[in-house]
Image (tube, rainbow, N blue to C red; front, side, top):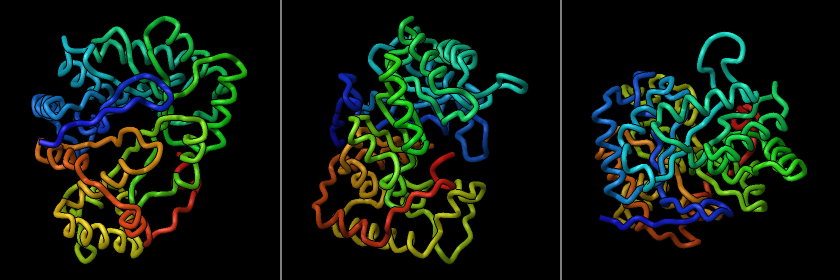
Length: 327
């Protein structure tokens, strides 16, 4: 078994494992989810066996079911782990049922604490930017949660760099808690953030927690360009299907070739590439099974030379698009 590695998140002293277990699959909100609480807990337990101490969920994942499962799994061992969750998405119909208003943020933080069965959230993240709420109001609400001891650190996810820069600047001038991390889509075929938020994160020493490190299974080599997908997220997720481009298949060809040369799997190689990128603290892996989880941890033992990294990146040129990233 490959030994887990640890790092600190961004400029903080918070220690996290180099792999973060994503908990979006734990629940019953979609066909591709695990839909079995006990099996979900078994995956979490296996992650702990591997040395993973960092867990990421959100209030909208199965309308809170994911948080409940994670809370039950960690239970009386809470102090050993770092729990991250998110706020923004719609949790009920009607006014104030979503967004980043002071009311919604404070209300949802309390609800997440209850579902997680904990007195504090290590990393509380805004899931998206809210154009309908002034960022100063959101920061004030998050600052309140930190002051009350209900949240330790705050983070952000998936937004245009100019918006994130505005949030960091506003926090500085208003003397509010500052975002210490950014979750963004980042993998070998989705490199648009290299032209958006990643340079800002490096400049501001903000930790990066990439989601979708395997591009919805594309980099796991589970699809064939000549066959219609019969299972997996590509059957229902348009974003995953949109990755089926000539350029991306060329990336996968290189992944396959280099993985074979190094006697590792495409999964291990793809995640290893992320672990070699400057500023990346902990890619979020989202397995549905113990076997899938076991197949990701080996990435920690894969070393890549500068030439191998260039070879993997050669087929694509990262381009930022508002339609892709500013969601």
